[in-house]
Length: 247
Image (cartoon, rainbow, N blue to C red; front, top):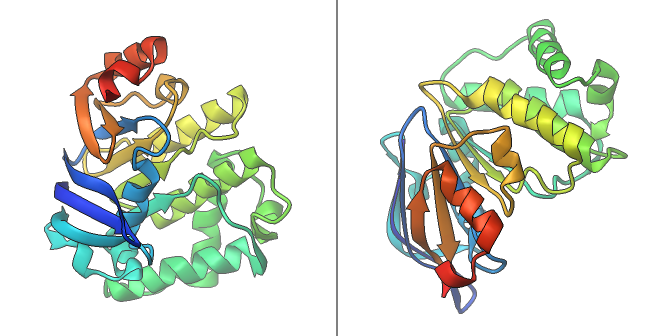
């Protein structure tokens, strides 16, 4: 589903990703861990198409397409979802309005008919209920006045509504207490643990992986993946840290 080959990314004149390669097949969950400054967020922003992140060499293929040739909204319509470490607030724009416009814009690019207001509300209510959010919260401005846990739950509702093929989640566990972590983990599994979908989890800690069991764990250091393994690698990192691996 996702094939990253020798990816180099620079911000201004500083190279951050230095030959990163990674392959993710449908049905797989991959976790990337690593020290601060290793390039984890740069990888997510590069895949999402954020301006200012210049790919200087390498290739990324997503579901048979050249991902780097697509604009950010085209990447979303192709089935890529990017979850942020710090979801932004959008005053004056309700969750319901934002999500309906986003979903129908993607459907239009895919040649699908837009959902009516009633059809969309049925989908939104089901996803909100599954994450323990009521519709009153979805009528509020996007993330405005939400706690850290509520923002992450809201992001899982967004993911459920948009129903992507690949979810790239950048430190989704950041700022979550134990109960919120469990709920968010259950949300990821419910929406994305399917044979035709895949997940790339960026995390500092093993604790999220207690709820979202990865198939593979990778260590990112100095702009490239330096070690890969199974779930046991995350436990090793939790015990011993990154110093020896990232040296």
